[in-house]
Image 1: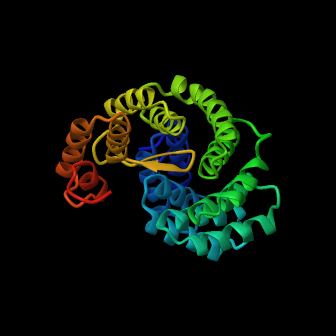
Image 2 (image 1 turned 90 degrees about the horizontal axis):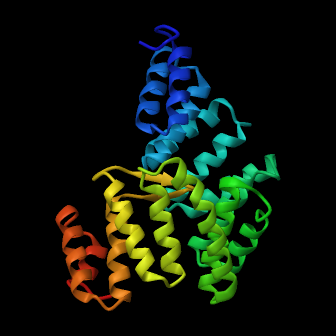
Image 3 (image 1 turned 60 degrees about the vertical axis):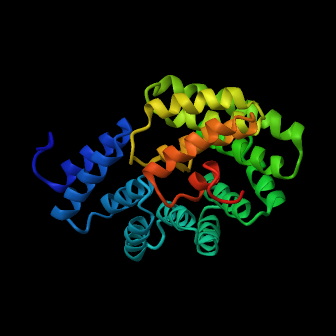
Amino acid sequence: MPFGGENAESYYDEGLTAVMKGDTDAALEHFSKALQMDPTLTAASYQMGRCQLRLGQAQAAVQTLSAVLARAPRMTAARTELAYAQLLRGHIDEARTLFGEALNERPDQPAAILGLGYCAFQQSQWDTAMALADRLMGGSGAERFEALYLSARAAHMLKLREIALNRLQAADELLNQIIETSPNQPEGYYLRGQIHFLMGDYVKSLDTFRTAETRALPGKHYCAYHEHFELLDVLAGQGWCMKQMGNEAGAKEIGRRILEIRPNSKRGKRLAGEAAE
């Protein structure tokens, strides 16, 4: 029983506490109980949709957040989260429309600006993605990290190596905070592995991906700074590092490990040498 008693508001408060602790699964359960007691509690529906998104439950998040907007059509935050859920589903046009609507309501919303940048990146519009990310370069915390990371990846695709390298280094420095705050969680190490890979430092990237592996639970979905991943992504990162380092045997072993977990994985088959690159 929650501290405040068996009522919707108490379960909602318990859910918020779980969110702050990073326990998204528990938060989702609390918000669900709150809604069982009071289906009209829009704030609980919104938070439930956010949890579903962070757990990789994109379709469920779309349904939940769409229902929130049906009741509260001017709730810009819900519109932005719905856009990210559509983006995770691969529905880029729908996501772009929602991000645009959110910006019409709140022109200064960083999450929507970044969202449009992610849409552009997914559609290989590197210049647009970089320009949108650069608009937020003066921010701080999570906003600044995402802006640096997105801009760096776009610059990398545009072969602007010096710009990409400078921004990757700056993003890497910001990761120290998330790693220091949650040293036993894989998120910061996974992102650092990605950054070092783009920097071409495959030895450091491989080492960091291995650290992430020791902290990632099989079957668990992780989300940090709108980056979604699971253990298979961590293993794939190791495999691509090994290939870049010329360790074909090591890459094949990683591929086989991936296929043991997910037999139809295209990445696993490529790394194991069972499919064309």
